[in-house]
Amino acid sequence: MNDENNTNPQSQISNIRSATFPLLIACARGIPPYVKAELITMGFPIVAELDAGIETLGTLTDAMRLNLCLHTGNRVLLELDRFTARQPEDLYQRIQTLPWEDIIPDDGYFTVTSFINTPAIRDSRFANVKTKDAIVDRIRERTGRRPNSGNERSGTVVFLYWNQGDAKLYLDTSGESLSRRGYRKIPMLAPMQETLAAAVVSATGWTGEGNFLNPMCGSGTLAIEAALLAQNRAPGLLRSNYGFMHIKGYDDEAWQKIRTEVRALPKRPFPGKIIASDIRADAVEAARQNARTAGVEQLIEFEICDFADSPVPKGGGVVVFNPEYGERLGEEEQLKPVYRGIGDFFKKQCQGYTGYVFTGNMALGKGIGLRHSRRILFFNSNIECRLLGFSLYSGSKRNKTDGATEPQEAPVEP
Ligand SMILES: C[S@@+](CC[C@H](N)C(=O)[O-])C[C@H]1O[C@@H](n2cnc3c(N)ncnc32)[C@H](O)[C@@H]1O
Image: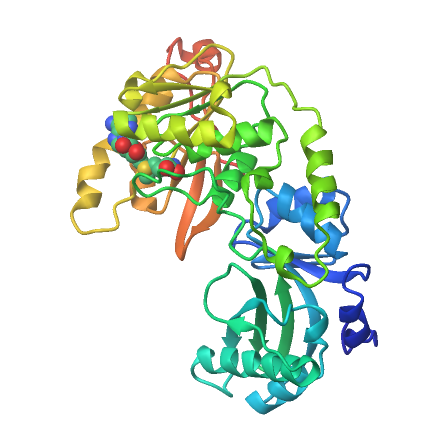
């Protein structure tokens, strides 16, 4: 598939329905370990681990399956070619040698997106235009017709990665990001990206044993993703459009077969409860409707209440908070008592649970007033965030030494 291993990109591309390609599962920084775990569970090889992605190998049919089933990846990029390019003209020349007429319908619509970090050009739009021109010129030359192009990701999507002299061309088989599952019709305030929420749930280790509590649920993303993960439900079943559907020779029969197989997988029953609550009635209503759209409403209990009054059933589990973290001046001060209150709630009411707080503000995180036992790095857009974990012992530990009844804080992990 590339210069290094001497496979021929032209013939690979012409055989796109059967050939094997490098597949890059792109994700946000901090998320690769969770993508890697999913790929291993699905039986895919791990070829490379990157800052914002995991590389594996597979066919176009494998790419379809990954689009349907991955919880934590944002895009499935199928690598068509990799080469050296110093100047935009090198890019144009190489791209024109590829048989685009075999993959982009000449009456179709395509988009070029890119990541560019090269001294050869200042404006990434120029590289996109060069790429688009090379594709259109090639198709027109071979077929006498030309596809339309634009910025919507609703048709075929070509992704160019150009870092210094290294260029790679991909088909973005996802089109729109996989975080757009299609269930969040009502987003509410500062909703968490669905793929990030799935990674946060995975990081807590909750798989359905014990309870999953999500006070401050907002639009319900964490609770919905927890339900999808616990039941082993494919999050992509709701989406009706993917980039791979706009590749010439797209095999709808193969896609329907994969969907049927995945849908027929037994839904894993889980003994724990999922409880989502928020102080705002409209947020709880939005969360309920979003869960209904996602097909998991019956798996989640909803409550309208202040987090301090949210139910904590016996049996332990995890309790996950995603409070606001105050990006504007003055907000941090107002949020201090909220974070302190979360710490008090953990101490007084969550014995036997592991508490988690996802925040982009470590100063506020410290205000929780407990020593965290885990601190996991994530990124929300470009904001560096932490998932702080607190082991909340059931009280017996301290009882044995000083007779106090409050849960003890966990020792800090090395
Ligand atoms: C950052 S948003 C949560 C976003 C959520 N993770 C999502 O994906 O939609 C914080 C939520 O906390 C709720 N909230 C604020 N103060 C609260 C309180 N005292 N008790 C319960 N919920 C509260 C807000 O109504 C808001 O929905």
